[in-house]
Amino acid sequence: MTRILDCENLDNGECPRDWDKLPLAGERDIRVCTVCLKAVYRCASSEAAKLRVAAGHRAAVTE
Image 1 (cartoon, rainbow, N blue to C red):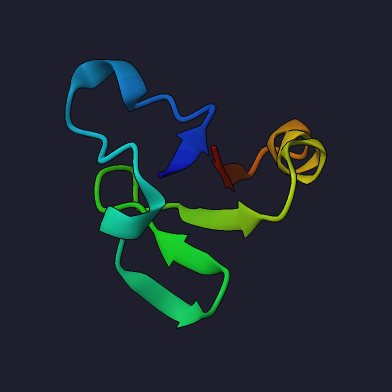
Image 2 (cartoon, rainbow, N blue to C red):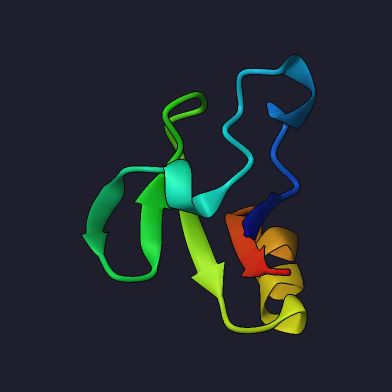
């Protein structure tokens, strides 16, 4: 599973929480959350994901 990190919608039960459930956004490593309508970037490492989150983006990383 490729888990979405630091999404404000994770607690409301509507967030898919899984990268594979998000629709494609035209790029291989970017998808769109259907709940918050923000881009979610798939990252190769947890360090890269933390940098995305620190920059205010949504990130996903494989567990």
